[in-house]
Amino acid sequence: MTAVIIANGSYPRHAIPLAHIERAEFIVCCDGAADDFIRRGGRPDAIVGDCDSISPENKNRFADILFRESEQETNDLSKAVRFCVARGKTDLIIVAATGKREDHTLGNISLLLDYRATANVKMITDYGTFTPIDTYTEFSSFPGQTVSIFSFDPLPLTFSGLLYPVENRVLTNWWQGTLNASTGTVFSIDTQGRVVVFQAFPE
Amino acid sequence: MTAVIIANGSYPRHAIPLAHIERAEFIVCCDGAADDFIRRGGRPDAIVGDCDSISPENKNRFADILFRESEQETNDLSKAVRFCVARGKTDLIIVAATGKREDHTLGNISLLLDYRATANVKMITDYGTFTPIDTYTEFSSFPGQTVSIFSFDPLPLTFSGLLYPVENRVLTNWWQGTLNASTGTVFSIDTQGRVVVFQAFPE
Image (cartoon, rainbow over the protein chains, first blue to last red):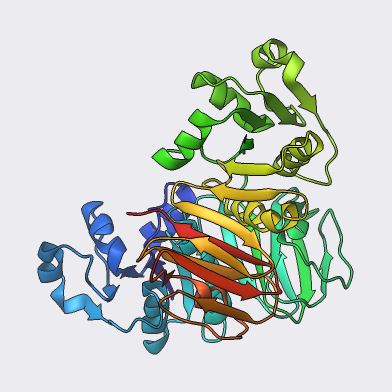
């Protein structure tokens, strides 16, 4: 069973992340997202965070599913991931994690690399999907799909099935990995470093 | 004289980037931003890019300030920066560079590190300012300002004047550098690596 985590960024507008929320069997709201989700008619299975930004009304109404974690060493998204993993839910889709302050966007994308150790995690935005990897990985795709590859370590990468091939090369600048494109229905990335792969939705 | 570059992301909504556009003595629009800026009553000094996304009407009306560059090795933002530098304009403010596809946001933020070699460049979003550095740098601030520090190289950093001090330490995860805060009117970062510093606007 896949759990969907609704983070504190902009609520999704695109049909794909909205469908994941719609179909989810288990939904965890980060603290700051709960009011918005509930106002839209949603019913979270759990609300996780320091719970200082949820309305008194919802705090009371949803008291039985409120999991307060006030430590400041991690953010609400990391607390929600930890909550899911502790309950055996390790297939996770994160939505609403971008679209507001850019430092939160950057932080949340890089945190995917940490979550990988304990969960099978993807982030779905209004524009596409981010997947963290650290080993040879094959991706389902479609011809022409925009693929952007962000390398967090100075370690070599090899792409295959992409329009602009890379062979055992370190990408020192993120721009170098952006705006590649899939040539078929599968592509692969080989690396020993920490890499986040963005696959854009069809336009 | 500072030149303002309007990139292809979301048009600014916050008063601070809008004031930079308003007061600019020289405005360069990336190709894809020109129609939007002109519709809002703006009058660019130059339009730079592959010019495939500007309307036929504006293409004709602004033909004298259209600088077409169709090479695919860089994006429109890099072309606009290069255009300014070639004309001796090396104090650059970039706006509208975030807020749409996240891979563009990440690419544009990382490109600041490249621009640094030829220009004094800042990116101003609806939430704050990004500044690229690669040496000891002091920043004007205000007590309590949120400061997020993104390190692109595995090299040590030292912060001073921030709530959570770092002393000669490599930040391997971007989350580790986010959500710091200035304790006074100046803070400093010492590094030999490539670092992008985000300073949030007052709330």
